[in-house]
Length: 347
Image (cartoon, rainbow, N blue to C red; front, side, top):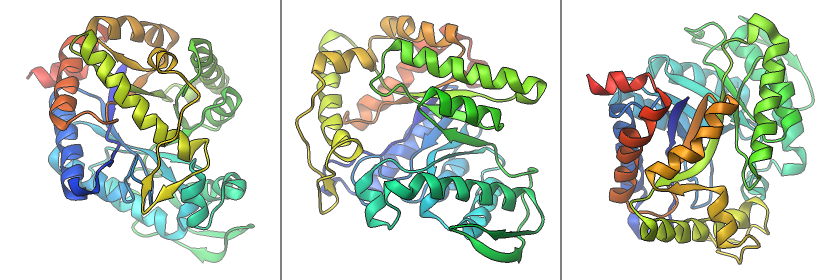
């Protein structure tokens, strides 16, 4: 089982500065590369102060310039917000400038506030995403493409430059419901998912759906991978664990507001709202614990057949604490799961 660090920008204080925040994320990526992580991942979100990365392909190129080995995943690029005729070219350039380390995770968008203000409300984002994905894959695969759909109508054109890798970088589909995972896998896509607040059975259902779709592809699906995202932090002790869970609960009071709540945002800052989930329930659903407990919690993921766990430690801890958590995870947890990149880090 491989591991990735999600470089998700959390910006509770505007005075901290976007320049400092993105330097923190770059520093985390460099440490992940040095300590044997398989990948780092970058969100795409606009107009809000959590998961704040409005230019993921640009940042992917910056990360590639500062690292040597890690794959760089978008988690995820929100296709309905882009024009695929120009976005396909941006993807090709980013793949070239990242030396072929880009993995393009794609999704429909999840936050109503963001999507409404950018002109693609959630009630049409699924339909537009489906067509956008079909257009994008055609533009990356075929030398000349014309289109006559609901959201795209254009005469024959060719995206330039052409992809170095046939069909462009690997595409990872963001899906949460097991049936969506199954059908996306059958289409030949890698999968990015998360149990969110679901229990272990939900995680197993997600993995089983992926394995079922992959099996039906036969040899053609052998290369497909399932990446599962979790908020995670290697705590030093019980007091540290409780402090980090409290910070995560504060983070989720904002996340819930834009994900399932009313989307109250003031000058870019998401308002914290009371949560229905208790702190104890939240603690059970996250991977915030000491290294020994982390190993125990990750065991079922490896046994189920998860290929990669995407760890998100960015929910309010200081940069020094976050770097220490990443280092601790690499030294004390990853070796238990036979990560082959460990040998690279040790050289």
